[in-house]
Length: 302
Image (cartoon, rainbow, N blue to C red; front, side):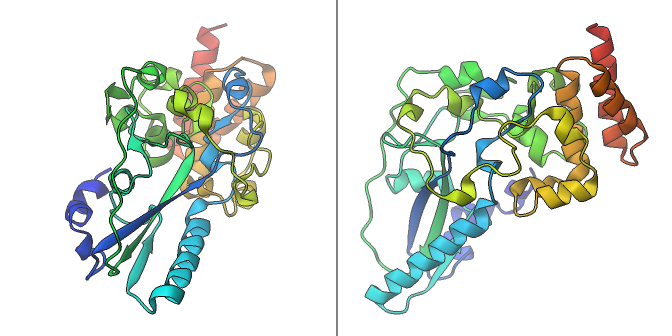
């Protein structure tokens, strides 16, 4: 993720993103769907696990629209003011900023945790020249708990508050453009897009609030879809079914790459081997190689 190094100065100098900024308003918005099974899906090797944030529509546009509406409401009281909104769209240190604004603390898994709302929420920011009052930062309440560290499937949380992105399933299935490292493939299980394990075990998420926003609710049956069902999608169907979804950004080939690994970690069947054999002639080398790996892994385990 070299883009983090390329834009490092902007992260530490907000005025480079918005000249004249003197305050940053941070917000959070819950995204956990009302009824989307998690542990049950992870325990079933025939099903595909998609990170909960990606089950519905892409949050970027929705949250950005809400932030712009908030700016309009503020201007009704303050008059015209200079502002710029961000939703994971620029080099913004959103979690440290949210921590300083009192929205929660950064947990040992590097996600933000709120005492009364857990961690299933998105963050957004408004950079402004309004000299608003400054909030008190949140205090850390992780204590001696290390549940997230123990639960990480690939041991990506190498120390409290330190995540090795190269081992993180979210990075491997979303950001990584090349082949998934061989030694990590068996550890992915049936996780085909992102990973929520560290949040699933966090005790503070017993206070998590379900989202009331329909756009964040599951679409296309992705909360309980089978791996074979999703692996059978051709590119046209993938683009049609992921329209308006963050999943679409990884592209069809990476989608098939991820599912091939999950199939290799699952149960062998005539249907699975048939689908994998069909992908051996796919024009993308990544798809072919990961499908072959899955077939060989299934063969060794039978």
